[in-house]
Length: 224
Image 1: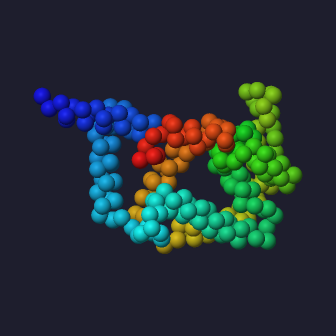
Image 2: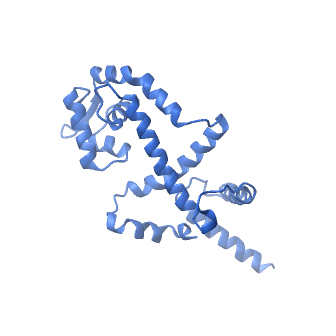
Image 3: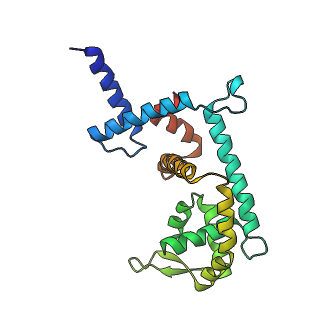
């Protein structure tokens, strides 16, 4: 019997279970086979198409580049969003993003709305209060629990959103730049995977001073 092969398979299964805590492969042989295929494909893609990045020759890590580029993209997007709401009653891009979420997903509690926008409670409450004062959202008692307040978008909020939507759509198109359709789909898949990983961590509200240590302890593959 080839015990070394058995040992290697067991190690692969262990790595599969670890990775699958933040991914969405089925927990059966088909999921395991798909995971192995994806791992092999990623390795081949790295070998065949590893890009150059600034500082690579001096040992700058891929993780450093990814982090920097995500920060840059956020700043570029904010610049275009600022242009989209110029000469309007919107104070920040978060104002119209909150309204868009309420329009798309319907009434929700304040905390549900804040969490959907990945923000801290104090910042989120300021935005919601600003929208209330503008008359763009309103609070209503929940039908299920009268102690709970639900936030809904008003007719005035819908009108304010509609007035800026053409510029907002133009801003989102610019952010996607010159990517073709295939590149956009690939980017969505990658960013969605990354978002799912971080959202699970974010939703746990781990104290800032313990956050990095907790993530490293639970996800050993990050150190590899």
